[in-house]
Length: 249
Image (cartoon, rainbow, N blue to C red; front, side, top):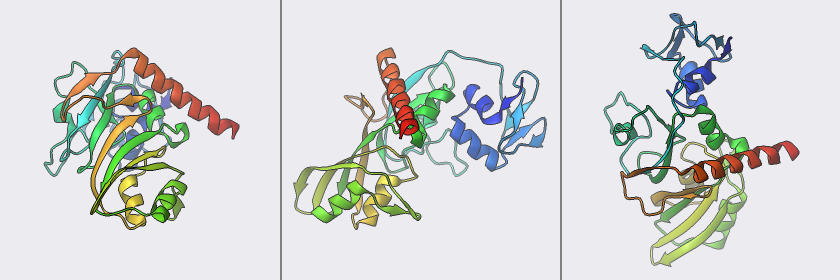
């Protein structure tokens, strides 16, 4: 039976569905030796699917696994990099199954990053329609006034599109330095940093503290642990609630 190519790639444990779509658009995916296109379908039991020349085992169905990592600063959220930069793959290479990162944290950001081999779970955690909240501790190089707080919370324009409303509060203040706690439900590229830049704030440090009810807790930079079944189920319920809310709106 033929199914969407990005779903096949995700279910093989190679990457998330959204990342698979990016790979297809970049013409890095081939089906039976021919470059794939968005919307294409394939038979996972018959067709030969490769990414960057690597043959995918599309018939394999590993048991789904779910991990959380404290990503340190200076690591790229990718499994490989043609420029030789350090990647988060080095921090999960000891796991018994192949996993991929859920969403991303930029090179100079740190904190909670999820890993899985479950493409549907990854899609639920990252798709804007699911509205899964993510909380960040953001240190900026200045005081923050009421107007800046209001603009961040109500939304700012990035690339011609307004960001969704955010929860923003001041956690600490001292001369020349303010610590903000910001919760967003989107996941645009470098969204928090760009939001702050849009209101005249320079980010000195950015750390993701939580994704929904799952918190970074006592993990240290580079440490990894498996999510509990209760944490996985809580995240699934949250994503399902977001999807229902969008449908009813």
